[in-house]
Image (cartoon, rainbow, N blue to C red; front, side):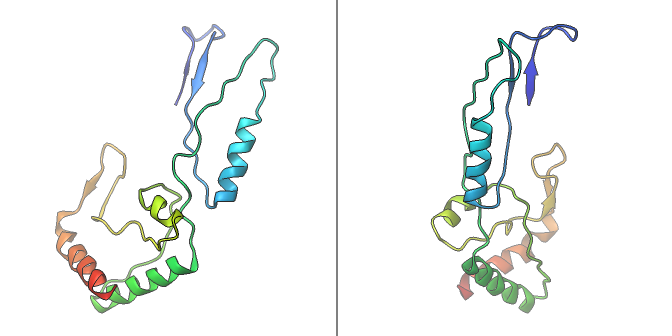
Length: 141
């Protein structure tokens, strides 16, 4: 989100930008944050104030996460589901557990589309099969 100014043909006295960034590893998050914090204005008389930072750690794909996914895959296979591993670079509460070293899978909730959009929805017809998968996975674990 970028905002500032009072008219389209006037240089604004102040402007703000809110940026949402994601990183695949803690090292990459640190590199990106450092680069942003080291930014300097390029025009005389202009100031730059930088605040904030990453609000959750990256969810790293560790060997333990791979092993957990393979267990989940086998449970799904027994139920006739063909799950695929994927990654979106998004952020969830699972980022916090993964950062603690707890093998974490994300995206096992309700099926649907349009996350964070006006058309976001879940598919009610898929709730029974998703629930059966989650119950079987819990029994397996």
